[in-house]
Image (cartoon, rainbow, N blue to C red; front, side):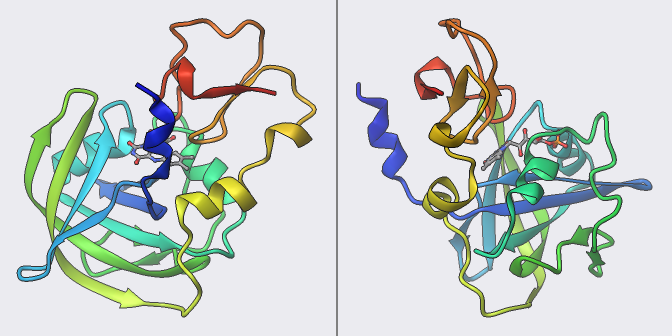
Length: 199
Ligand SMILES: Cc1cc2nc3c(=O)[nH]c(=O)nc-3n(C[C@H](O)[C@H](O)[C@H](O)COP(=O)(O)O)c2cc1C
């Protein structure tokens, strides 16, 4: 199979946030979808290794902030390249807090929605959560960022990099070394060696 066919599925980009006790955290996802309008329900697919996944599983609540085209790469690095297991990703940036107690991003986003989990399906590497949208606010008329826009305009391109190695075509993570091991799995988005390109 030519796995490149999968690259043409269109996605948006989102910051998925959750709160557990006093801990706020979040991660970048591209897998938010509206599944029904009445009731208003969405689904998200979250890797089990993500700290945010466990937080959503245990609390049953999350917010989705819709990233817009003004969003700098910094924000992807903060929420998409580090884990809340080791860092406080929410320190030093502007945040709002919605009625469900969960934080959202008021800048570089078109708005946010608050969600309550109604069902989850274990898909092996990921858990798919289905959730009711309980609240939401539109914050700007900026264009929402698509995954294609992120690849073309935001993610550092392989050609411009000073680092030698292989870059994950999916999220931009760089494996420093040559050759790339056949069993390499991106620690960020968990895609395999086929999805890496040589820098
Ligand atoms: C562009 C981009 C898209 C991503 N999409 C997803 C996704 O749909 N689902 C997912 O589980 N992780 C996705 N990730 C990876 C997580 O954001 C990343 O593993 C994060 O560091 C997890 O943080 P946490 O451990 O604090 O939850 C994506 C990362 C990037 C940069």
